[in-house]
Length: 114
Image 1 (cartoon, rainbow, N blue to C red):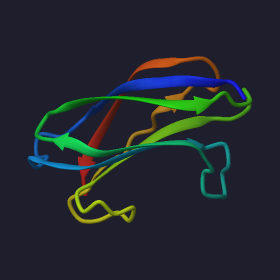
Image 2: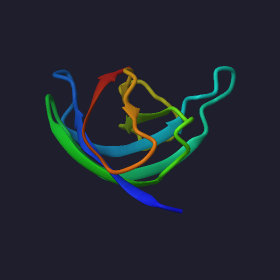
Image 3: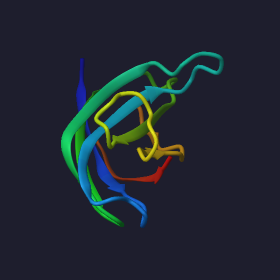
């Protein structure tokens, strides 16, 4: 299995609290129309600094996949440290497409409070 590096920046909103929290980035196969998108790779950053407008660099490893797969990156910053979405968590709400092969750099992942 050929692994590659995916990197970029998570941009926090101006109303983000000042704290530390668990940040999780998931690469998912969004090719499936009627099913939950299977997880291809995940990276966890347990003590991420959170503050208004902060730009947090990230890097993760992921396998190369078939060119027929459509991949997308998702981010959740959990203020309570839970995998369940909770009030005040910061999440990505835009589609962040990721190429199926080769290193990917310069991604921008904007998160908003829920």
